[in-house]
Image: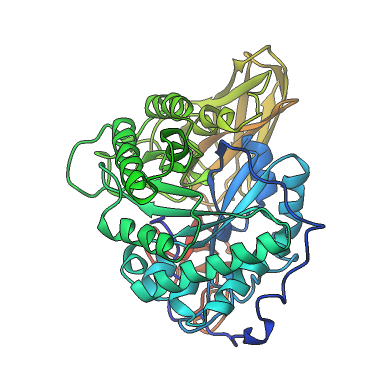
Length: 507
Protein backbone atom coordinates (compact mmCIF):
# COMPACT_ATOMS: atom_id res chain seq x y z
CA UNK A 1 0.00 0.00 0.00
CA UNK A 2 1.14 3.52 -0.62
CA UNK A 3 0.53 5.32 2.63
CA UNK A 4 3.18 3.59 4.70
CA UNK A 5 5.34 5.50 7.19
CA UNK A 6 8.99 5.96 6.40
CA UNK A 7 11.30 4.62 9.10
CA UNK A 8 14.29 6.21 7.35
CA UNK A 9 17.91 5.61 8.16
CA UNK A 10 17.42 6.55 11.81
CA UNK A 11 16.44 2.99 12.67
CA UNK A 12 19.49 1.43 14.29
CA UNK A 13 19.47 -1.87 16.10
CA UNK A 14 21.37 -5.09 16.53
CA UNK A 15 20.09 -7.71 14.11
CA UNK A 16 19.73 -11.19 15.50
CA UNK A 17 21.06 -13.89 13.20
CA UNK A 18 18.55 -16.66 12.61
CA UNK A 19 20.53 -18.96 10.37
CA UNK A 20 20.78 -21.54 13.12
CA UNK A 21 17.01 -21.85 13.28
CA UNK A 22 16.73 -23.84 10.08
CA UNK A 23 13.36 -24.80 8.68
CA UNK A 24 12.28 -26.98 11.58
CA UNK A 25 13.12 -24.58 14.39
CA UNK A 26 9.67 -23.00 14.41
CA UNK A 27 7.63 -26.07 13.61
CA UNK A 28 5.18 -26.92 16.34
CA UNK A 29 3.31 -29.75 14.66
CA UNK A 30 -0.36 -29.99 13.82
CA UNK A 31 -1.84 -29.74 17.30
CA UNK A 32 -2.21 -25.97 17.16
CA UNK A 33 -2.93 -25.70 13.44
CA UNK A 34 -5.03 -22.62 12.72
CA UNK A 35 -8.61 -22.63 11.49
CA UNK A 36 -8.66 -21.92 7.73
CA UNK A 37 -10.16 -18.64 6.56
CA UNK A 38 -13.65 -18.67 5.03
CA UNK A 39 -13.85 -19.20 1.25
CA UNK A 40 -14.97 -15.58 0.92
CA UNK A 41 -13.56 -13.10 3.41
CA UNK A 42 -13.63 -9.38 4.09
CA UNK A 43 -10.31 -8.42 5.71
CA UNK A 44 -9.51 -4.68 5.69
CA UNK A 45 -5.94 -3.57 6.31
CA UNK A 46 -5.09 -2.38 9.82
CA UNK A 47 -2.28 0.18 10.25
CA UNK A 48 -0.32 -1.51 13.00
CA UNK A 49 2.04 1.40 13.74
CA UNK A 50 -0.67 3.67 15.20
CA UNK A 51 -0.57 2.23 18.72
CA UNK A 52 -4.25 1.25 18.50
CA UNK A 53 -5.62 -2.14 19.50
CA UNK A 54 -6.59 -4.26 16.48
CA UNK A 55 -9.02 -6.27 18.63
CA UNK A 56 -10.74 -3.10 19.84
CA UNK A 57 -10.98 -1.67 16.32
CA UNK A 58 -12.29 -4.97 14.96
CA UNK A 59 -15.02 -5.04 17.62
CA UNK A 60 -15.89 -1.38 17.17
CA UNK A 61 -16.12 -1.61 13.37
CA UNK A 62 -17.64 -5.06 13.02
CA UNK A 63 -14.78 -6.37 10.86
CA UNK A 64 -14.15 -9.96 12.01
CA UNK A 65 -10.93 -10.37 10.01
CA UNK A 66 -8.03 -7.94 9.59
CA UNK A 67 -5.00 -7.79 7.30
CA UNK A 68 -2.19 -6.58 9.59
CA UNK A 69 0.30 -4.22 7.95
CA UNK A 70 3.30 -4.54 7.83
CA UNK A 71 6.21 -6.89 8.62
CA UNK A 72 9.68 -5.95 7.35
CA UNK A 73 13.31 -5.88 8.50
CA UNK A 74 14.92 -3.03 10.41
CA UNK A 75 17.64 -2.54 7.82
CA UNK A 76 18.73 -3.83 4.45
CA UNK A 77 20.66 -7.09 4.80
CA UNK A 78 18.76 -8.28 7.87
CA UNK A 79 16.82 -11.56 8.01
CA UNK A 80 14.86 -10.72 11.18
CA UNK A 81 11.15 -9.97 10.70
CA UNK A 82 9.73 -7.10 12.75
CA UNK A 83 6.43 -5.29 12.80
CA UNK A 84 7.02 -2.03 10.90
CA UNK A 85 10.75 -2.76 10.95
CA UNK A 86 10.89 -1.64 14.58
CA UNK A 87 13.10 -3.53 17.02
CA UNK A 88 10.58 -2.62 19.73
CA UNK A 89 7.94 -4.71 17.88
CA UNK A 90 9.37 -8.22 17.43
CA UNK A 91 7.41 -11.22 16.21
CA UNK A 92 6.38 -12.52 19.61
CA UNK A 93 3.24 -13.08 21.70
CA UNK A 94 4.03 -9.80 23.46
CA UNK A 95 3.43 -7.89 20.22
CA UNK A 96 -0.24 -8.14 19.18
CA UNK A 97 -0.49 -11.69 20.58
CA UNK A 98 -3.32 -10.95 23.00
CA UNK A 99 -5.21 -8.93 20.39
CA UNK A 100 -4.94 -11.69 17.81
CA UNK A 101 -6.13 -14.33 20.28
CA UNK A 102 -9.11 -12.13 21.14
CA UNK A 103 -10.00 -11.74 17.46
CA UNK A 104 -9.69 -15.49 16.91
CA UNK A 105 -11.84 -16.22 19.96
CA UNK A 106 -14.57 -14.08 18.40
CA UNK A 107 -14.56 -16.25 15.27
CA UNK A 108 -12.28 -14.04 13.18
CA UNK A 109 -8.57 -13.98 12.39
CA UNK A 110 -5.74 -11.82 11.08
CA UNK A 111 -3.61 -12.02 7.94
CA UNK A 112 -0.08 -10.74 8.66
CA UNK A 113 1.25 -8.85 5.64
CA UNK A 114 4.92 -8.68 4.65
CA UNK A 115 6.25 -5.76 2.64
CA UNK A 116 4.36 -2.57 1.87
CA UNK A 117 5.48 0.59 0.08
CA UNK A 118 8.18 1.62 2.55
CA UNK A 119 9.76 -1.84 2.77
CA UNK A 120 9.54 -2.27 -0.99
CA UNK A 121 11.38 1.01 -1.63
CA UNK A 122 14.08 0.73 1.06
CA UNK A 123 15.29 -2.84 0.61
CA UNK A 124 13.71 -3.96 3.88
CA UNK A 125 11.10 -6.29 2.39
CA UNK A 126 12.43 -9.52 3.84
CA UNK A 127 13.09 -11.36 0.56
CA UNK A 128 14.86 -8.28 -0.81
CA UNK A 129 16.82 -7.81 2.41
CA UNK A 130 17.75 -11.41 3.22
CA UNK A 131 19.63 -13.52 0.65
CA UNK A 132 19.22 -16.84 2.47
CA UNK A 133 16.06 -18.64 1.29
CA UNK A 134 15.96 -20.88 4.36
CA UNK A 135 16.10 -17.90 6.72
CA UNK A 136 13.28 -16.19 4.82
CA UNK A 137 11.23 -19.38 5.13
CA UNK A 138 12.04 -19.56 8.85
CA UNK A 139 10.79 -15.99 9.28
CA UNK A 140 7.49 -16.87 7.60
CA UNK A 141 7.14 -19.97 9.78
CA UNK A 142 7.83 -17.94 12.90
CA UNK A 143 4.92 -15.63 12.13
CA UNK A 144 2.64 -18.57 11.36
CA UNK A 145 3.38 -20.43 14.58
CA UNK A 146 3.66 -17.40 16.86
CA UNK A 147 0.17 -16.18 15.98
CA UNK A 148 -1.35 -19.49 14.81
CA UNK A 149 -2.65 -18.01 11.54
CA UNK A 150 -3.59 -19.65 8.26
CA UNK A 151 -2.68 -17.02 5.65
CA UNK A 152 0.29 -14.78 4.94
CA UNK A 153 0.07 -11.79 2.61
CA UNK A 154 2.94 -10.49 0.47
CA UNK A 155 2.47 -6.80 -0.43
CA UNK A 156 4.88 -6.42 -3.34
CA UNK A 157 5.07 -3.18 -5.32
CA UNK A 158 7.42 -0.53 -6.78
CA UNK A 159 11.10 -1.57 -6.45
CA UNK A 160 10.34 -5.05 -5.11
CA UNK A 161 8.35 -5.84 -8.27
CA UNK A 162 11.49 -5.36 -10.34
CA UNK A 163 13.87 -7.18 -7.99
CA UNK A 164 13.96 -10.50 -9.83
CA UNK A 165 16.39 -12.04 -7.33
CA UNK A 166 14.12 -11.12 -4.42
CA UNK A 167 11.07 -12.44 -6.28
CA UNK A 168 12.77 -15.77 -6.88
CA UNK A 169 13.97 -16.05 -3.27
CA UNK A 170 10.52 -15.20 -1.96
CA UNK A 171 8.76 -17.82 -4.07
CA UNK A 172 11.35 -20.46 -3.22
CA UNK A 173 10.95 -19.66 0.50
CA UNK A 174 7.16 -19.85 0.24
CA UNK A 175 7.47 -23.27 -1.42
CA UNK A 176 9.60 -24.46 1.52
CA UNK A 177 6.97 -23.16 3.93
CA UNK A 178 4.19 -24.89 2.02
CA UNK A 179 6.10 -28.18 2.14
CA UNK A 180 6.74 -27.68 5.88
CA UNK A 181 3.06 -26.92 6.50
CA UNK A 182 1.92 -30.01 4.60
CA UNK A 183 4.34 -32.19 6.56
CA UNK A 184 3.02 -30.79 9.83
CA UNK A 185 -0.68 -30.95 8.99
CA UNK A 186 -1.14 -27.20 8.78
CA UNK A 187 -3.30 -25.30 6.32
CA UNK A 188 -1.47 -22.22 5.09
CA UNK A 189 -2.54 -19.89 2.29
CA UNK A 190 -0.46 -17.29 0.47
CA UNK A 191 -1.84 -14.10 -1.02
CA UNK A 192 0.07 -11.69 -3.22
CA UNK A 193 -1.10 -8.08 -3.05
CA UNK A 194 -0.08 -6.29 -6.24
CA UNK A 195 -0.66 -2.91 -7.92
CA UNK A 196 -2.77 -2.91 -11.06
CA UNK A 197 -3.84 -0.94 -14.08
CA UNK A 198 -7.52 -0.67 -14.90
CA UNK A 199 -7.00 -3.69 -17.20
CA UNK A 200 -5.08 -5.93 -14.82
CA UNK A 201 -1.56 -6.22 -13.38
CA UNK A 202 1.35 -4.82 -15.38
CA UNK A 203 4.00 -7.07 -16.92
CA UNK A 204 6.20 -7.16 -13.79
CA UNK A 205 3.25 -8.38 -11.68
CA UNK A 206 2.53 -11.14 -14.16
CA UNK A 207 6.24 -12.06 -14.18
CA UNK A 208 6.14 -12.46 -10.39
CA UNK A 209 3.25 -14.91 -10.69
CA UNK A 210 4.98 -16.73 -13.54
CA UNK A 211 8.04 -17.17 -11.33
CA UNK A 212 5.83 -18.70 -8.62
CA UNK A 213 4.51 -21.21 -11.14
CA UNK A 214 8.04 -22.10 -12.26
CA UNK A 215 9.08 -22.68 -8.64
CA UNK A 216 6.08 -24.89 -7.90
CA UNK A 217 4.83 -22.28 -5.44
CA UNK A 218 1.08 -22.26 -4.86
CA UNK A 219 -0.50 -18.81 -4.95
CA UNK A 220 -3.92 -18.97 -3.34
CA UNK A 221 -5.02 -15.37 -3.82
CA UNK A 222 -3.89 -12.49 -6.04
CA UNK A 223 -5.15 -9.32 -4.37
CA UNK A 224 -5.26 -6.23 -6.61
CA UNK A 225 -4.81 -2.71 -5.20
CA UNK A 226 -7.58 -1.11 -7.25
CA UNK A 227 -6.62 2.51 -6.53
CA UNK A 228 -3.73 4.94 -7.09
CA UNK A 229 -3.76 4.48 -10.87
CA UNK A 230 -1.96 7.81 -11.42
CA UNK A 231 -2.96 7.87 -15.11
CA UNK A 232 -4.51 11.37 -15.11
CA UNK A 233 -7.86 9.94 -16.20
CA UNK A 234 -11.32 10.39 -14.73
CA UNK A 235 -12.35 7.20 -12.98
CA UNK A 236 -15.44 5.30 -11.99
CA UNK A 237 -13.58 3.31 -9.36
CA UNK A 238 -16.12 0.48 -9.21
CA UNK A 239 -16.09 -0.04 -12.98
CA UNK A 240 -12.29 0.03 -12.92
CA UNK A 241 -12.24 -2.63 -10.20
CA UNK A 242 -14.29 -4.91 -12.42
CA UNK A 243 -12.14 -4.41 -15.52
CA UNK A 244 -8.90 -4.79 -13.52
CA UNK A 245 -10.13 -8.05 -12.00
CA UNK A 246 -11.30 -9.33 -15.39
CA UNK A 247 -7.83 -8.62 -16.77
CA UNK A 248 -6.30 -10.54 -13.87
CA UNK A 249 -8.68 -13.44 -14.42
CA UNK A 250 -7.58 -13.65 -18.07
CA UNK A 251 -3.90 -13.55 -17.10
CA UNK A 252 -4.42 -16.26 -14.48
CA UNK A 253 -6.15 -18.42 -17.10
CA UNK A 254 -2.91 -18.41 -19.13
CA UNK A 255 -0.80 -19.21 -16.07
CA UNK A 256 -3.17 -21.92 -14.80
CA UNK A 257 -4.76 -23.45 -17.93
CA UNK A 258 -6.22 -26.39 -16.01
CA UNK A 259 -8.33 -24.24 -13.67
CA UNK A 260 -12.02 -23.65 -14.31
CA UNK A 261 -13.55 -20.18 -14.57
CA UNK A 262 -14.94 -20.53 -11.03
CA UNK A 263 -11.54 -21.59 -9.68
CA UNK A 264 -9.85 -18.60 -11.33
CA UNK A 265 -12.31 -16.13 -9.81
CA UNK A 266 -11.83 -17.83 -6.43
CA UNK A 267 -8.13 -16.83 -6.61
CA UNK A 268 -8.91 -13.12 -6.89
CA UNK A 269 -9.08 -10.41 -4.22
CA UNK A 270 -9.51 -6.65 -4.48
CA UNK A 271 -8.45 -3.91 -2.10
CA UNK A 272 -10.06 -0.49 -2.39
CA UNK A 273 -9.19 2.84 -0.76
CA UNK A 274 -12.32 4.41 0.75
CA UNK A 275 -12.89 7.98 -0.40
CA UNK A 276 -10.12 10.02 -1.98
CA UNK A 277 -6.98 8.06 -2.83
CA UNK A 278 -3.40 9.34 -3.02
CA UNK A 279 -3.79 10.66 -6.57
CA UNK A 280 -6.65 12.95 -5.63
CA UNK A 281 -10.37 13.58 -6.19
CA UNK A 282 -10.33 12.12 -9.74
CA UNK A 283 -9.84 8.76 -8.04
CA UNK A 284 -12.57 8.79 -5.38
CA UNK A 285 -14.14 5.53 -4.21
CA UNK A 286 -17.65 6.36 -3.04
CA UNK A 287 -20.19 4.49 -0.94
CA UNK A 288 -22.15 3.85 -4.15
CA UNK A 289 -18.96 2.35 -5.64
CA UNK A 290 -18.64 0.14 -2.56
CA UNK A 291 -22.15 -1.22 -2.98
CA UNK A 292 -21.49 -1.95 -6.67
CA UNK A 293 -18.21 -3.72 -5.88
CA UNK A 294 -19.85 -5.75 -3.10
CA UNK A 295 -22.60 -6.95 -5.43
CA UNK A 296 -20.09 -7.76 -8.19
CA UNK A 297 -17.72 -9.58 -5.79
CA UNK A 298 -20.60 -11.63 -4.43
CA UNK A 299 -21.78 -12.56 -7.93
CA UNK A 300 -18.28 -13.48 -9.13
CA UNK A 301 -17.52 -15.34 -5.87
CA UNK A 302 -14.05 -13.83 -5.56
CA UNK A 303 -11.98 -14.78 -2.55
CA UNK A 304 -11.15 -11.53 -0.72
CA UNK A 305 -12.60 -8.05 -0.27
CA UNK A 306 -10.44 -5.50 1.52
CA UNK A 307 -9.68 -1.81 1.74
CA UNK A 308 -6.86 0.44 2.85
CA UNK A 309 -7.31 0.96 5.72
CA UNK A 310 -9.71 0.40 8.63
CA UNK A 311 -8.60 3.63 10.33
CA UNK A 312 -9.71 5.64 7.24
CA UNK A 313 -13.33 4.47 7.42
CA UNK A 314 -14.81 7.70 8.78
CA UNK A 315 -15.88 11.11 7.50
CA UNK A 316 -13.94 13.37 9.85
CA UNK A 317 -12.21 15.26 7.01
CA UNK A 318 -14.80 15.79 4.24
CA UNK A 319 -13.42 17.66 1.25
CA UNK A 320 -9.86 16.96 2.27
CA UNK A 321 -7.07 15.01 0.55
CA UNK A 322 -6.16 11.39 1.20
CA UNK A 323 -5.21 10.92 4.85
CA UNK A 324 -4.10 8.16 7.22
CA UNK A 325 -7.13 8.48 9.44
CA UNK A 326 -10.12 9.60 7.34
CA UNK A 327 -11.61 9.14 3.89
CA UNK A 328 -11.93 12.73 2.69
CA UNK A 329 -15.65 12.32 1.89
CA UNK A 330 -18.95 12.75 3.70
CA UNK A 331 -19.73 9.46 5.44
CA UNK A 332 -20.56 7.93 8.79
CA UNK A 333 -17.91 6.05 10.72
CA UNK A 334 -17.66 2.44 9.51
CA UNK A 335 -19.94 2.96 6.47
CA UNK A 336 -17.57 1.07 4.15
CA UNK A 337 -17.07 -1.71 6.69
CA UNK A 338 -20.81 -2.18 7.07
CA UNK A 339 -21.19 -2.54 3.30
CA UNK A 340 -18.35 -5.08 2.91
CA UNK A 341 -18.68 -7.07 6.17
CA UNK A 342 -21.44 -9.45 5.01
CA UNK A 343 -19.08 -10.70 2.28
CA UNK A 344 -17.39 -12.99 4.81
CA UNK A 345 -18.80 -16.50 4.46
CA UNK A 346 -21.16 -17.35 7.28
CA UNK A 347 -21.31 -13.83 8.66
CA UNK A 348 -24.47 -11.81 9.07
CA UNK A 349 -25.14 -8.12 9.30
CA UNK A 350 -26.00 -6.89 12.80
CA UNK A 351 -29.66 -7.42 13.58
CA UNK A 352 -29.83 -3.92 14.98
CA UNK A 353 -27.48 -1.02 14.28
CA UNK A 354 -27.38 2.76 14.48
CA UNK A 355 -25.33 5.81 13.51
CA UNK A 356 -24.14 8.91 15.36
CA UNK A 357 -23.60 12.38 13.83
CA UNK A 358 -22.95 15.90 15.11
CA UNK A 359 -24.68 18.85 13.42
CA UNK A 360 -23.00 21.21 13.06
CA UNK A 361 -19.72 19.29 13.02
CA UNK A 362 -17.60 22.33 13.94
CA UNK A 363 -17.82 25.61 15.82
CA UNK A 364 -15.75 28.52 17.10
CA UNK A 365 -15.92 30.23 20.48
CA UNK A 366 -14.00 32.92 22.37
CA UNK A 367 -12.44 31.57 25.57
CA UNK A 368 -15.02 31.87 28.32
CA UNK A 369 -17.93 31.23 25.99
CA UNK A 370 -20.05 28.19 25.19
CA UNK A 371 -20.55 26.15 22.02
CA UNK A 372 -23.34 23.68 21.36
CA UNK A 373 -24.14 21.07 18.74
CA UNK A 374 -26.88 18.50 18.25
CA UNK A 375 -25.86 14.85 18.49
CA UNK A 376 -28.19 12.86 16.27
CA UNK A 377 -28.67 9.11 16.20
CA UNK A 378 -30.46 7.06 13.56
CA UNK A 379 -31.47 3.42 13.05
CA UNK A 380 -29.40 1.94 10.21
CA UNK A 381 -30.49 -1.70 10.57
CA UNK A 382 -33.14 -3.61 12.42
CA UNK A 383 -34.92 -2.10 15.41
CA UNK A 384 -34.16 0.94 17.55
CA UNK A 385 -31.96 0.27 20.57
CA UNK A 386 -30.86 2.18 23.64
CA UNK A 387 -27.69 4.21 23.00
CA UNK A 388 -25.47 5.56 25.79
CA UNK A 389 -23.55 8.72 24.82
CA UNK A 390 -20.16 9.85 26.12
CA UNK A 391 -17.59 12.54 25.24
CA UNK A 392 -13.80 12.37 24.99
CA UNK A 393 -11.01 14.61 23.75
CA UNK A 394 -12.04 17.83 25.50
CA UNK A 395 -8.90 19.86 26.36
CA UNK A 396 -8.11 21.36 29.75
CA UNK A 397 -10.47 24.22 30.55
CA UNK A 398 -13.41 22.76 28.61
CA UNK A 399 -16.37 21.12 30.33
CA UNK A 400 -18.45 18.85 28.11
CA UNK A 401 -22.00 17.78 28.94
CA UNK A 402 -24.70 15.84 27.09
CA UNK A 403 -28.42 16.32 27.64
CA UNK A 404 -29.64 13.65 27.71
CA UNK A 405 -26.69 11.25 27.94
CA UNK A 406 -28.77 8.29 26.75
CA UNK A 407 -31.26 8.10 23.88
CA UNK A 408 -33.16 5.55 21.86
CA UNK A 409 -31.69 5.28 18.35
CA UNK A 410 -33.45 7.92 16.28
CA UNK A 411 -33.32 10.43 19.13
CA UNK A 412 -31.05 13.45 19.67
CA UNK A 413 -28.99 14.99 22.44
CA UNK A 414 -27.41 18.42 22.94
CA UNK A 415 -23.66 18.60 23.46
CA UNK A 416 -22.60 21.70 25.38
CA UNK A 417 -18.93 22.71 25.53
CA UNK A 418 -18.23 25.36 28.15
CA UNK A 419 -14.83 27.07 28.03
CA UNK A 420 -12.95 29.24 30.52
CA UNK A 421 -10.46 32.06 30.06
CA UNK A 422 -7.71 29.51 30.73
CA UNK A 423 -8.79 27.26 27.84
CA UNK A 424 -5.92 26.93 25.34
CA UNK A 425 -6.44 28.72 22.06
CA UNK A 426 -6.41 26.43 19.05
CA UNK A 427 -8.44 23.75 17.32
CA UNK A 428 -9.52 20.72 19.30
CA UNK A 429 -11.25 17.54 18.12
CA UNK A 430 -14.02 16.32 20.41
CA UNK A 431 -15.37 12.77 19.99
CA UNK A 432 -18.89 11.68 20.88
CA UNK A 433 -19.28 7.91 21.26
CA UNK A 434 -22.59 6.11 21.15
CA UNK A 435 -22.63 2.62 22.67
CA UNK A 436 -25.44 0.14 22.28
CA UNK A 437 -25.91 -3.65 22.33
CA UNK A 438 -24.74 -3.92 18.70
CA UNK A 439 -21.47 -2.01 19.28
CA UNK A 440 -20.14 1.54 19.26
CA UNK A 441 -20.16 4.39 16.74
CA UNK A 442 -18.57 7.81 16.94
CA UNK A 443 -19.00 11.35 15.64
CA UNK A 444 -16.48 14.18 15.70
CA UNK A 445 -16.92 17.85 16.56
CA UNK A 446 -14.14 20.35 15.87
CA UNK A 447 -13.97 23.16 18.45
CA UNK A 448 -11.88 26.24 17.70
CA UNK A 449 -11.06 28.42 20.72
CA UNK A 450 -9.71 31.97 20.37
CA UNK A 451 -8.44 34.41 22.99
CA UNK A 452 -7.56 31.78 25.57
CA UNK A 453 -4.84 32.42 28.12
CA UNK A 454 -4.05 28.75 28.69
CA UNK A 455 -1.49 26.82 26.77
CA UNK A 456 1.25 25.54 29.01
CA UNK A 457 2.65 22.50 27.30
CA UNK A 458 2.62 19.48 29.60
CA UNK A 459 4.55 17.10 27.36
CA UNK A 460 8.33 17.16 27.69
CA UNK A 461 10.07 19.33 25.09
CA UNK A 462 11.26 17.53 21.96
CA UNK A 463 15.00 16.94 21.79
CA UNK A 464 16.92 15.83 18.73
CA UNK A 465 18.78 12.95 20.39
CA UNK A 466 15.81 11.29 22.09
CA UNK A 467 14.29 8.09 20.70
CA UNK A 468 10.48 8.26 20.51
CA UNK A 469 8.26 5.24 19.95
CA UNK A 470 4.65 5.00 18.78
CA UNK A 471 2.29 6.95 21.03
CA UNK A 472 4.90 9.01 22.89
CA UNK A 473 4.29 12.77 23.02
CA UNK A 474 6.57 15.81 22.95
CA UNK A 475 6.01 19.56 22.92
CA UNK A 476 7.62 21.78 20.29
CA UNK A 477 6.96 25.38 19.22
CA UNK A 478 3.72 25.66 21.17
CA UNK A 479 2.18 22.41 19.92
CA UNK A 480 1.89 18.91 21.33
CA UNK A 481 3.06 16.17 18.97
CA UNK A 482 2.52 12.39 19.03
CA UNK A 483 4.92 9.94 17.39
CA UNK A 484 3.20 7.51 15.02
CA UNK A 485 6.15 5.12 15.04
CA UNK A 486 9.82 4.87 16.04
CA UNK A 487 11.78 8.05 15.36
CA UNK A 488 14.78 10.07 16.42
CA UNK A 489 16.20 13.31 15.06
CA UNK A 490 13.10 14.23 13.04
CA UNK A 491 11.83 17.65 14.11
CA UNK A 492 8.07 17.91 14.71
CA UNK A 493 6.42 20.12 12.13
CA UNK A 494 8.97 19.35 9.40
CA UNK A 495 8.04 15.80 8.41
CA UNK A 496 4.90 16.66 6.43
CA UNK A 497 1.35 15.38 6.53
CA UNK A 498 2.38 11.73 6.18
CA UNK A 499 5.39 12.07 8.48
CA UNK A 500 6.13 10.50 11.83
CA UNK A 501 4.70 13.34 13.96
CA UNK A 502 0.96 13.90 14.45
CA UNK A 503 0.05 17.45 15.50
CA UNK A 504 -2.30 17.27 18.48
CA UNK A 505 -2.82 21.03 18.44
CA UNK A 506 -1.65 24.02 20.39
CA UNK A 507 -0.81 23.75 24.05
